[in-house]
Length: 279
Image (cartoon, rainbow, N blue to C red; front, side, top):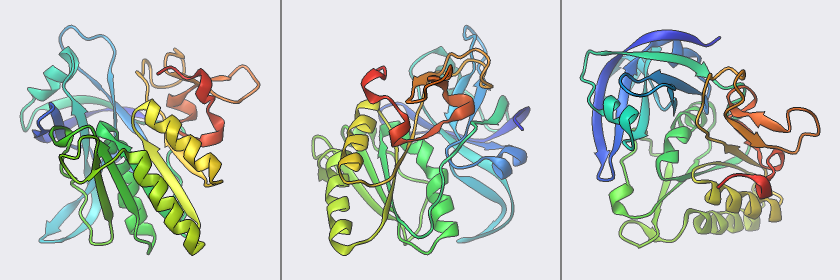
């Protein structure tokens, strides 16, 4: 069950030129209970009224020696881009300060399929929503997941706190300043074609700009490949009361406009009405 916590800031630093920051928070209950894809909201002081939502990223265990860690999960990362007064206030927080955190939120997170080849497709800051999933796939399966990380240019790239020799990271930029000159969806098409020839079952997971998600949905639908997408919206209450974070779905009941905070944020590709989605 979600609850309010005073989470202690362990780290808060800028990780990319385009005002992208990473914060590490000490909050054992959220670190233990958050599922891949779930999120928290943070109360920002000053002129802001609504809490700000952030995906729960990597979780860290209590003890660590060199490359080994053990014990119960006790802390987690979030990533954010400084765009307004709320995130500006967050960027000014120092180690040791406490944040008012509400979570974990979301009725349905990503589902790991251990016998499928996992392809994770991330666009920009959307990568934050896939880090916990990547961690879960590496822990629960013996597969070598592919992570396609697409950004506009090298200024928007930030290094992953997730490190594993089993993770096949593919970086693509629109201007070719880093990695492959291509869109993330173009790299996805190439990967799907390769696995189609091999006869390997694939599960696609995607987070990012809605135009990218729509194209990912189109590509996977044409190839009859299952796809889970993480829908992101500005969240009001976080518990499904205000209905401020709805997305149009294929449901035929009163929840056709479905709140992501209670029925998401993960949706299967076929559950979203892409033609009626706000872009």
